[in-house]
Amino acid sequence: MLWDKLTLAQKFAASSLTQFGYDLAFIRCSRAGNLAVLMCNRDAATITAEGDIDTRPEIAIRVR
Image (cartoon, rainbow, N blue to C red; front, top):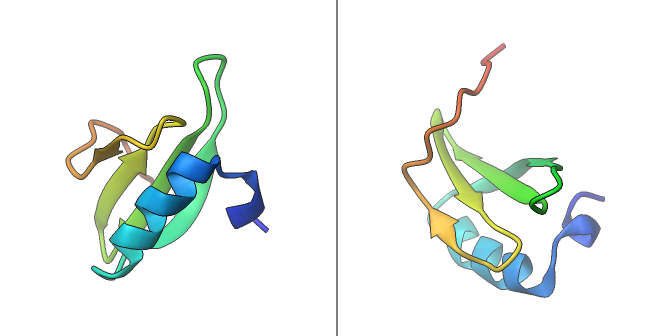
């Protein structure tokens, strides 16, 4: 379901990260565009709407 909300650029970038064990966790929506957040264990990676990957994002993730 989340996968359908990604841009084409985000889908390509996300598919490359899944090869390293990342899974799409959620999408953060903002006026600047949707930011895809992927997790691998406790490590986060983000992908901008343009497909830019950041494996060291400065975001806080609440862990349950």
